[in-house]
Amino acid sequence: EYGLNVIILSLLAFIVNLGFGAISSILPYFILYLEGSLSTLPEELSVIKGASEYAFEVGTLMSAFMFTRAFLARYFGIYSDKIGRKKIVSLGTILYAIVSFFYVIAPSIYWLYAIRMLQGVASAMVWPVAEALLMDSISEDVRGRVMGVYMATTMFSFIGGPAIGVIVYKIGVFVLNIKDINIALRFPFILLALLSLIAVFTVARLKDVTVSKNSKNQQNEGKVKLLRFVKRSINTLYAISFSNGVAMGLISPVVSLYIVEYITSDPAAIAIVSFISGLAGFLVTYPAGYLSDKIGRRKIIIAGILGSRTATLLIPFTKTVEELTAVATLRNINFNFYTPAFRALQADLVPQEIRGKIFGTVQMFFNLGAVIGPILGGAVYQAFANQQILGLPGVAMTFLISALIGYVSLLIFILYVKDEKPASP
Image (cartoon, rainbow, N blue to C red; front, side, top):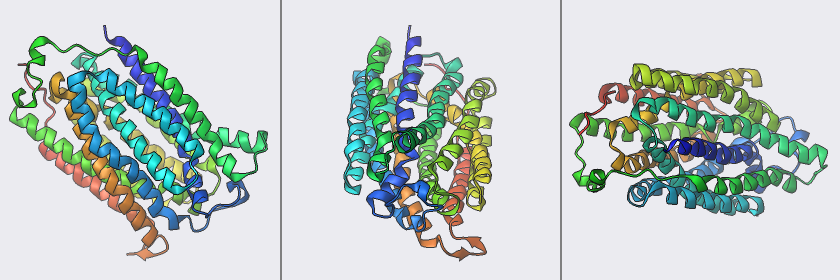
């Protein structure tokens, strides 16, 4: 009855993330342009000297997005438990479309801060609720593989997005002969606006999953009884999500800056790294989800976290596009190996009537960490970029801290999270 939801939600994830993926490879250049550090087309330069001086600005822009998402994700999740998922997802998708048009006309860095905060609101409305609806729509024995399909479509959009964004940018510069850097850098934002409009119409055929009458009588959180190990596991997942947000946020704003300052200024480099590493991650997503349905979530999650955090350590020691691509590929394979299992585990532990709240709260803690991470990461990267610390290049400090946080999170997961399904009431 609800199988169409899986298709629609996967398509929604693909369309929206394709658009925002397309601008991700251009956005660092756009920020440098708005800040006055880039006045000519990047192709006319070998590297962009001094890009690390704007690491803090790039980090705070990411934090602005995560700030609004962090504080609203849980409440939209709770609200969706009460009024249904479709309304929240639909309104959030409309807000995405509005935000995309603001990107096209943004005249200053201050506009970008406001736009990113609005984008965070839209993200809080759509993704936690969409994932809860996805889990509502399927039986528990296929959660891992369905989440794998959903994550695969998201990953596929992240694979193609940066490459498509660079292609659109290159078409503007070399085919349409746009030499004004202001217009050239805004050109890919038009694609984002068009894709966001398509997404609005995509969600129209979603169906809310009907909760049984008995479940409706229990929608008050206080009436839903959870076993002690379930409560402990959920609370631990909250803590891990927060630390994961910090760890990922630490490096997210600085990877692109590392590329343009230490490897090459050509936007195509970012697209190449994103495409190849993303494709590798995409290929393991569904098999990993399927495997987690068969052997359990725990083993998959442990292996994936360990591998992805180790690969993070290696990033600042790469000196060529080829080396960075190899390390990023290893990181993405491991990240996408455990993510479907991690999200399916959340659905395994709790009943449907509070699933929106749980998914929203997990997102809230992750996003709170992701508010702190980019600011801290940008500040650390900017402060130590040109120094040596204990014989290591200063740029490695941000990546080292991120990896260490990941290792601590893994230890907490091993000690306190059980891979068990609570007995049905």
